[in-house]
Length: 177
Image (cartoon, rainbow, N blue to C red; front, side, top):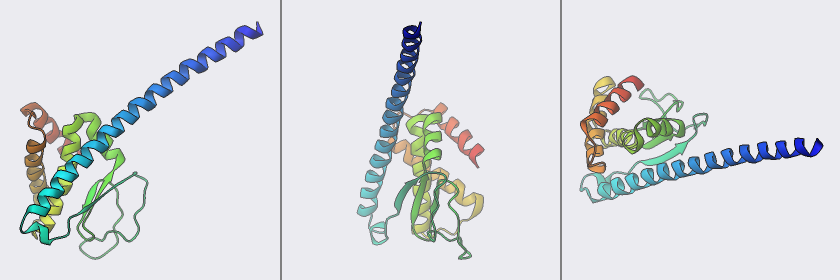
């Protein structure tokens, strides 16, 4: 009887371990895909930035990937020069930094695959372009322009994007604010 209990525990442990290991492999594979997309996008956009006669005179933004509960002290300020807490994926013009929050990146990737991730990257890079070009738009107009530029970026990176994916991205970004 004792051997039977031990066998059952061993089988249960083996089953749980197998499930856990397959989840780890799936998570690692997803994470590798996400990092690959971020690196590829950043490399291509950086090269284009450095080739542009106007932009190459301006420091290119850095991109930092962090967890939602991470704190960045002294890194960003709002227009009134007050300290600003990084609460989600965003662009900080004060220090020319794109903050990608892993949870946001994962959410956009899970819902829209590579197109979702490309959207969030392109939207924040669009804010850096607005900053470089000294755009005086603010509020919703600034966000709409960044969305428009992001749409153009996505069409370059994802040539197979169709109308259905575009509408899904638009609805999702609208609900995200």
